[in-house]
Image (cartoon, rainbow, N blue to C red):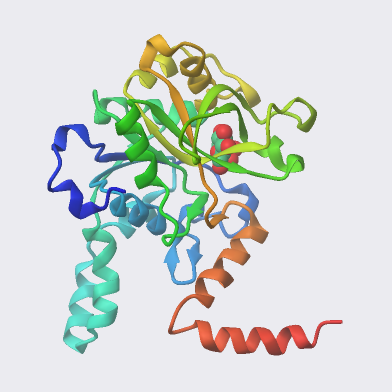
Amino acid sequence: MLVPSDRKNRPHAFLPHQAVIPAAGLGTRFLPATKAMPKEMLPVVDKPAIQYVVEEAVAAGIDDIVMIIGRNKNALANHFDRVTELEHTLERKGDHDKLARVVEPSALADIHFVRQGDPKGLGHAVLRARKHVGNETFAVMLGDDLIDARDPLLSRMIEVSQNRSATVIALMEVEPSQIHLYGCADVETTDEPDVVRVNALVEKPAADEAPSNLAIIGRYVLKPEIFEVLAQTAPGKGGEIQLTDALEELAADESIAGPVLGVIFSGRRYDTGDRLDYLKSNVLLALDRDDLGPELKTWMQELTATFD
Ligand code: G1P
């Protein structure tokens, strides 16, 4: 598995070091909280959801991030910037813990912002990063999917992409009744238990038309050929340009960019775009914290004892 320190010993040009994070969604499921604040800034315990995603990227060796943003997303840029007055105040008070927490987001990686313009879908958002990414393999990470740092996924996907010169998507088994919420993959096995070959993809199929219960979760390692395919991709499901449709094109014709493979993820993933899952992720991550976990656990035990 690749860890950041390994990067120093590997030929830089061959390791993906850029990630695209689409963050232009309206977050309507969280209204009114998201009326004046991007959904990516909703805190999970005490960090905005987007910071977990950036930290995950950095842990996989990424040092350059492009966020594709919409209107009213200034809070995102502010969060990853320095805030000198606050830093000086905390310094004067000698509050080094809080100071470190304030500075940390601005020191994680080089973060760039590109406006999406028309909200024409995920495929369109990724295409907006074309000029920045150039002719390199890169990662795409969706902010609604939070992958527990204890179960690294992106570094494994990068490894598979490098070893097999492939486009790699993250797949996870879901309840068949849930597959209509995801891109769905038709796959066959390979000689590695966590790697499958993707034969076909369909965006948000009805349960009775789904080729499997393997859902695309929001992590992708893409080759630059995807941009040309995206530029030619017609609007699909919901009238939007779908990344899944462009990937389907690659899966159907290996001569474009080699094979499309899936890494099957069986670790902990939280869908922070869903209100119930968002609440659960707060509880689960807080339970794991030394400063909050023990007291929260005791309180929860007392609370559940009062349930019928
Ligand atoms: C997007 C993708 C879908 C994928 C999902 C993962 O859908 O289009 O293929 O399964 O992310 O979270 P969205 O949830 O943005 O509608």
